[in-house]
Amino acid sequence: MGIKNTFRKIFSTSTETRERHHEESLKTRYYKTMKDKAMTEVETMLRNRKGFEIASVSEDHGEIVVNVKTGKKSFVVATIIMVRPFRTAVDFSVSTETFLFTDFGHSRKMIRELYADLDKRLQFVGTGLGDELAK
Image (cartoon, rainbow, N blue to C red; front, side, top):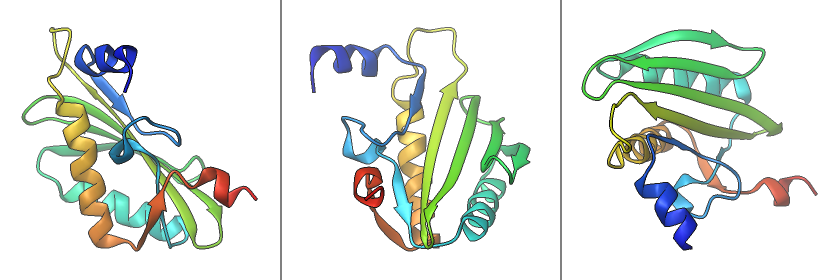
């Protein structure tokens, strides 16, 4: 990890997962399921977490927006995209409300927890598989 990524990691109040992230735990995760099932599982998972309040669900766009009301106040967006039959990508974006220049890793930790919970609910296939699945 370069110095630029280190500074970005330290001085950040938000974290996003993406296909080519420098941290393996923050790469897009793929599951062996259809989009509808993934949407249902992610929504149920988020709805059952303490302090999480679903703000909106868009089946068409594959997005679920959540406000976290307890602990460190946060804003979470889950994006679910079916890449091909039985290959669905799930990404998270977490922004923490704070008056400081950093959230001290809270958003990163929350994403890791969300993925760990989702791994128990859906069959995990791999991370960062976009290039492989595009063939």
